[in-house]
Length: 261
Figure (cartoon, rainbow, N blue to C red):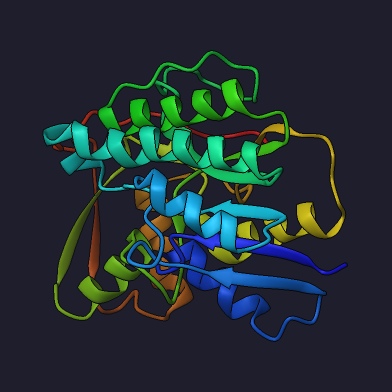
């Protein structure tokens, strides 16, 4: 029987990447892609109806509130989606015997560790976004036995969504100088690589459920990443990159959120 895979939050950068990579359906999976307007994970009645009317084997949850700055100012919105919505989804998946694959974040850690974070390290989020994502993780772990929680780092797509990669490209064409912090360190992760990892979990019928870390393995600062983007796109002559060690944001950010796969 062909496995049926639901992708929530399908209009985000990860959802759109999965759709592009597997739209030809050459790997024997039947995908259903739904945006927030088509299926709102914060609406439990809507979830119940959808799962009752559709046979689903796997649910890849890409639905999330990811505006870190705004989450600090209006945490109730972040918690509604990243915690309460995920709890709804976990309960529905349990009721319908669906394997949940949930995307989490490096921001569940405080960034004080000098080496890469492993799965078993103590979580300690320092901003509301991280707190809401950690609560989502806990709801899944308290509800389900068949789940994959995948923490990833500095996720970006070269084609979809609003992200650091695309912002640097845009600014390189309109600005002469760009100041980028060296005070944060992580592992920028291409949505293509994360998508392939997720599909491998399904395709191989993996049963080693639990929490995973997945990121591209090159550790760098935001400055390093910006420099890489400019070199990759032959734009180094367009803009002057300046290193800064201050990074003024409303939300606190982990200094180092490197994850060990």
